[in-house]
Image 1: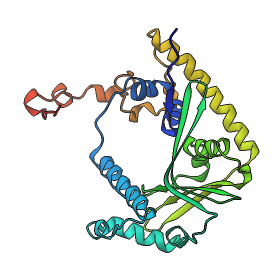
Image 2 (image 1 turned 90 degrees about the vertical axis):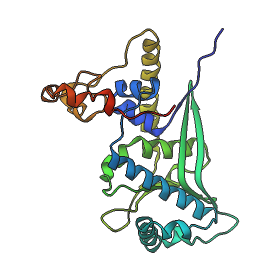
Image 3 (image 1 turned 180 degrees about the vertical axis):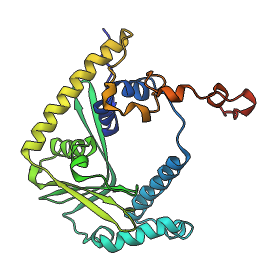
Length: 266
């Protein structure tokens, strides 16, 4: 008798499932990689460096040498420390728990839900989840509230602690928001918790069925064309959802000659 493997899921995986199950199949089940836009990759690297610096600062490690060689990071840290001094100069006491890159898991059936909080601040009465965002434009609060990061992060904390739901919160800090740091804070309650539990169970039940079908060579569902988000998806060609005019591009532009393809290191 073989046991069912446990699938590890993050908020990113849940967002993929909610947007398009077929995209989840390509990205997670099949691990297909697509070229990253150079500018997007640059933002990713810069964002990762900022998160690392915040983690090192929280651990008491020196970061000045890194800031001196990157003015953007230096400006972000300066603006952030001016806007939220309580994060940078906290009142430390034995009753307050603070941890950067705090990791938690919650198992639901055959799934292990994983979350990583950029910073968790908790005392005997309340718990605050803080998350750093380094892209320029903050999401609309109503959009961010429905994102699985917001929902899963507070849900997992509620399920793995004894805090009253009303005493759990999550704050996004946008450190590059048009030159000025902004934040969006969400509080929690019983109604949100029950709704997240319901939606989460439905999503995981669907995934269980889809994975079983996938093992029988049945692909996960596609979204409808009417939603008009396929055209910007990296898997548009694979899904036969590419614009007609894009298919008429000269074949030499689509497929470079062997001489022009860079060697890939193994």
